[in-house]
Length: 404
Image 1 (tube, rainbow, N blue to C red):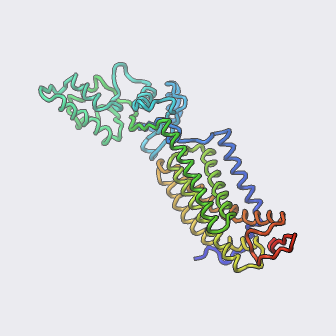
Image 2: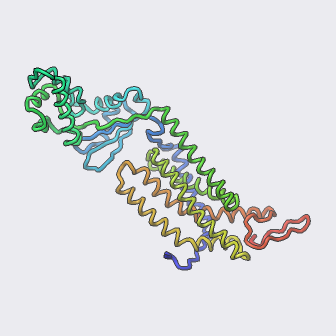
Image 3: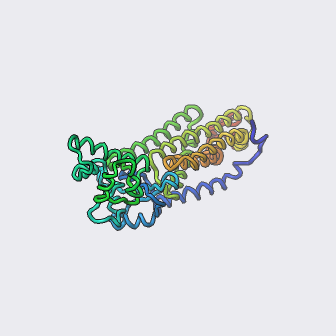
C-alpha cells in the first residue's frame, strides 16, 4: 500500500528550515530546563511522599494549596487524577517535608492541613483506621458485649471501614450512611466521638532520597548504554558516520522530548523513562529504514550525487514512514486521551517522541550524511560514502569522487 505515488520532494533543499525548527524547539527546551521549570523530576527520582485524597465534592486546587501552605507545606504539588467525577487529588510532598521512616507522617500532615473546621475533641471518621475505631468501641461498649469484646468490635470496626472504602469509595457524607451496615447503637455512639469530614486519604506512597538518586543514575545509564549500543551496531552494519548520524538524531529527539516536559511542567517518572527508551528504539528503527534504502541506491545510482540519492531514498520510503508513524501516533494519541492519569506522562512522551522521531529521520539523520561528505570534499579527502566509482588518486594529489 502506498500513501504517495512517486513523490519527488526536495527534502535536502529545505534543510535550513528543518534546522531552524529544531533549533527553536531545542533552545526553548534547554532554556526552560535551565531557567524556568528545570527538569521536573517525579517522586520516583527526587524522593518524597505521594498522598492520594478523595473529596466528597469537586475540589478547589487553590483552596487546597492555601491550606497546605498554612500548615507549612510550601513545596507541595497538587494534581488531579482519574475521572473528574471521582473528585480525586494527588498531593506530592517534597522529601524535605516528610520522612521515609514514618509512613504516616505525610498522611497526618495532609489531614491536619485540610481539617480546617474540625470539632474540638472529635476524630475524623473518614480518616480513622479500623484500630482507632475498635479501641473507641471497646471503651464505649455500645453493644454491651460480655465475652470476646475484642473480636466482636474488631469485626464491627472492619465493617465500618469496608463500607466507607468500598461502598462509599472512601468518603462518607454523613454518619447516617452507616445505617444498615452496623448496629444503630454503634452509629449513635460514633456520633459522640467522631465527625465526618469532606475528604478521605486513600493511599500513601513514599520514595526515599537514596532510592530516588539510585533510580536517576540507572535511568541515565540506561539511556547512555542504548545510545552507545546503536552507535556500535550501525558502525558495523553501515559506516561509522551512519552510527554517529543516528545517535545525533536520537539525542535531538530526546532533548526535544525532555524540553517539552519542562515547558509543560510535566513530571518525569519511571514510566516516562520507559517511553523515552521506547522512543530511542522507534526513532532508530525509522532511521535505519532510510539508511538501508540509501545503501541500496548507492549501488544502483552510482553516477549520481549523494544528495540526489539521499533525496530519492527518503521519497521512496516516505509512504512506509507515514503509514507506520501515522498508525502508531493514532494509538498513542488514544492512550494519551483515554488512558487515564497513570499513563499520562508515558503517553505524552510517546506522542511528542513519535512526531519528532519521524521528522528527524527525514530532516536530521540523512542530511548529516550529506553534510559530512561535503565537509570531507572541502578538505580534499576521499569520500567516506561513495556514490560512484572510487577515483584513483595521483601521486601527491587527492582526487575527490564525482558526487562532490
